[in-house]
Length: 177
Length: 423
Image 1 (cartoon, rainbow over the protein chains, first blue to last red):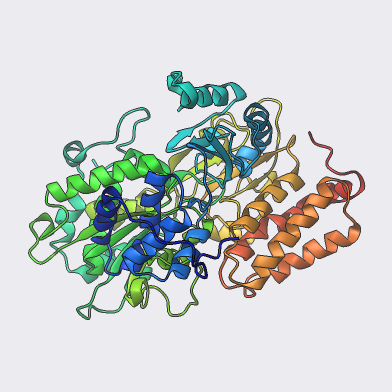
Image 2 (cartoon, helix red, strand yellow):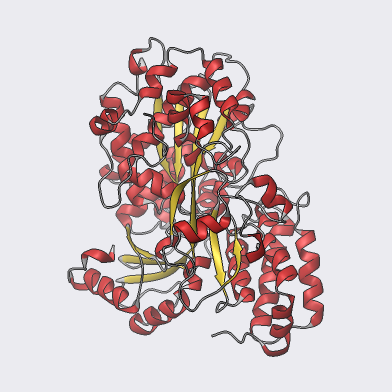
């Protein structure tokens, strides 16, 4: 689908001042700029929600990395989104401990309520549902993340509460997180 | 008196981790003050003699690993912490970082002095957001208090920087050479060994990659000495380690335990035994890439050698129980799906073999399998076995499958005839 290297249409956008500031900070951590590539993609994604072709080219240009090499990195890592995602990304753990405790039926619940399968985004662009490999909280299975927050001991009700919280700010019970 | 729980002594459920001041008041950073008065090579020797085995899963003697780093040549040398905890069923490094980040920092400083390194990286999985925030705070405090930066702990000429790198997924990053590629900003494919990272690692320079828990052991060993460390284990075993249990037990979790306790002690005394109505059918002793063991193995001490004799690996020592109400074929299918997804695609057996196995198991789930499939599965465990692949991902991935075929053949056959009969 994407062939940005050969594209004559897609042009690098201008990075914002905030993005540049954070990328410059990361540059102080490594002796070579190539090493900053992934962090820079994450910074861009933090501000833009995802990594568009224009963003990818901008980072490649800024760090003087070949665009195809950076694209190779961007597509390797599952937490870099090369397609638009919703405002909040729901990462539902589907690895073995969560599977044993019913993550498949929880996925069914989310799919029914939000009308999205894995890999899809709600029509209002609020939520994207993605499976995530073992989140390292197997003693509190089933688990998911929404954005940077981790939710443990999941039930259908807890998921509904968390989703309502992101939709309209309904407070979440303390014991949820 | 020195503690008998050096890894978790500062950890209390529900309480925020110690800041620098409290951590120091509780005896923290002692090992740094002690190590800077030693010869670096003596510090390596001390850790070697302690008998600490790496806690990432392979269990190799940590001091011995360090001793393979060549003498300084004036160029950079690196310590890299593998905090990319992604092995299914493993959640111990999260506990240590979230609840006592200064312990890891102290361990890194002491280790860097021993390795004569001036730079350390923590390679943290991106999903561990609480760990990220707490580590950043701890690192800043360490700089503010003279434990990082120029002349660490007042030792003239010992300069050290520690940086946090947060990753963005992919299990393969936990493989140490793939991790180094990722840290260099490349695709995380594994590298050929040799050369080993100790000789040619990050940016081609001498590099030691150690697991979080391994390095959290260093402050105790350097502060209290070899004799103290060795007495922590049960019987002839040395030290403590974080072991845990997940699945249908009464109290899933992880705890610091003396090395050498049996699986039964862990399962019953720590995890409170199986939940009512569920019986133990089998267990994975140390993560998703280890062979199943069965109840008759429960009285084995959690010792790498003995576990190997029983046909498995101790791995991360966080066990996952399979109960009698959960389908073993479905459990293996889930694990294979994980590994098929996480294969980096670099070498053929893994890239093609794992999706093939997943496909066969999916068919079986729906009752569309044939007896020939069992032969193919068996063959695949050898096709992807040790020596045929670039790294340990595929050989690990087929471990639950090969032991599953050994212990649950009846279940596989039943799936061929009727599909899955569990709900």
